[in-house]
Image (cartoon, rainbow, N blue to C red; front, top):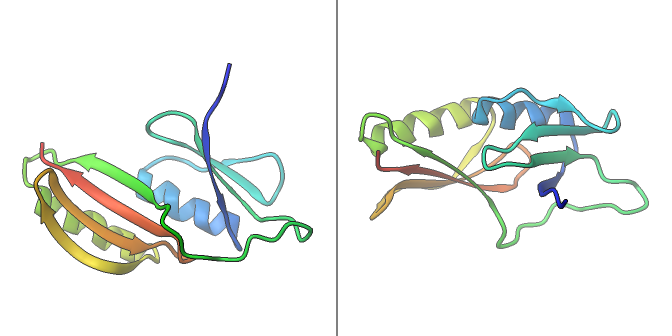
Length: 126
């Protein structure tokens, strides 16, 4: 059986796990070592957050890969729901990269997590 996970290198794995735990509304779980944390991923598998080994450093870099966190607007109003979610993310330490914008499927906003990783918040029409 194959298990899937997303892996995210971090300077402070515990703090980044707390950020994503609050944003995803799940409890971070200790991983295989003190520098490793796991969060259940809503689509299955886990988000693995760890501090890289000094022998294999992972310097921060911006690429085209990003985490996409998506929800469905419960009241059918994706704009207000996305703005509330974005405000929560910023209160947790995220930085807005691009302002929210309307798309045919709902609303989206790009941000940087507390360690500078790109994240797309996507609020689908309910």
